Length: 463
Ligand SMILES: [Zn+2]
Figure (cartoon, protein in one colour):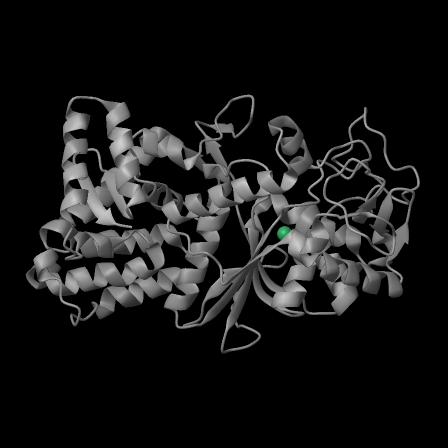
């Protein structure tokens, strides 16, 4: 049995890591100029499930992620504005404050959906020297040229760029709009920026051999990978929207600078729609995690909902489908709460179901089939005669699912002051006093506990 994984740039293949002792993963992290939405979270939930699956199969993992806190221009064009600088101008904060605020928000949000923080998290602004060194190396090898406004990668120097990008280079670059002015000294509109100069009002600026400025977006991921992982990565993940130009250009510059191979498997998750429409500012449908919590949902139900579909399919998010996901999870939570007396750490995992579960994982992380096995275990009447084995099997699968099953059987004694706040909140909810109920929840959370409203019940657990 071997894990079969789909690589975006080739096909489904047997997965073998470069170094058998450790699978090296890289995930494109958030651009911290705005709140992370439930749409963005799909990428991080996908990479987390992939990592937990790989661990479940017996591998050790080493996972690196960047934080894009500089250089994310709206387009590869002269008169566009860096997204962080734009937020800074609108919010009247420094770019550093904006980046810190949304970065903190991001880590709070991923914690709520049980996404483990990668082993190494690197801010783009902490690797400026490495990015400059990499551009320098590309320059020495003859891949770059300088214009009036920056340093560009010359895509004509990379064999088969058009094939890799799946673009006809004689056509207009898709991002070009009529009203904006191109850098006229750029050789081709497909050439991408490595270093930007001539932005005197930009708050983030560094000295470089090409003048004062800041790096382009793509170069940060290639430099961070090289510094923290090396020349070759087993798995690189990200949303499908990053395939071109971001990941295409990562491949081009990394291979040009450091040679082959670069990434063995590219894993891209598909989009989510909200009520059948794309997430957009105009529809105001870019829901955040607290929009779900304020409607009484347990954030983990989002994780469940995303697993109902394979990561490579589009998901249509609705609050009805989230309700169904939560109801499904609540059934298992209730079962575990009621039967926690049967929990036995030494109980064995059912071997037949475990084998089925593993083969679902090995089939390109087939989460719908993995959930199917979970429900087969849950509904197996025969296993009800051996509840410790049933519970052990559910907990074993949860190493991949991350639904927090263990919290529902834990025997922790709750402190009296926390219980008092919890009981007061139940009364407040009965009286429909939502303001007081929210205040009490915040107090409980600040003391390190979580309150989960399941719809039919309210549960208090240690966070
Ligand atoms: Zn990236």
